[in-house]
Amino acid sequence: MSSSPEYVAFIAEQLSELEDISYRKMFGEYAFYYKGKVFGGVYDNRFLIKITKNNKKLCENFEEELPYEGAKPMLLISEVDDKLFLKNLVEVTWKDLPFLKKRK
Image (cartoon, rainbow, N blue to C red; front, side):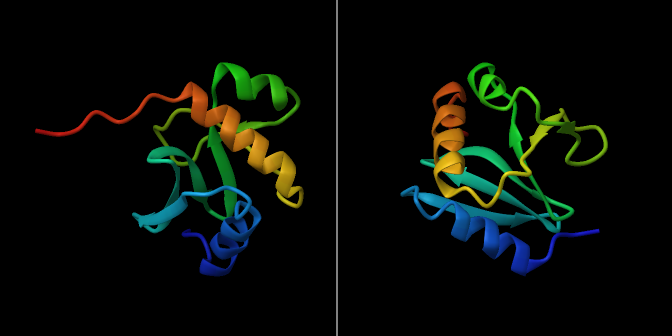
């Protein structure tokens, strides 16, 4: 099942406090980027974020779920109504993630 464009638009609006947020449709789902790094996405109408050392502290009681079979677990973000929380969570996550290596 793929995610609905309406839910993706809702998540994008909830992240609008951050500058340089974007998303891209990939295989029927949506990857979210912040300042050039993929930090999470919407999978089957679930907002999931990559697990890092520091965001795990902010979300210690959050469930971990697989975005798709064979993937690494991600944090299920159910607190999608609090824009300030989401802004902080994405910023903390971004700091822990490496930049993608450029292809030659």
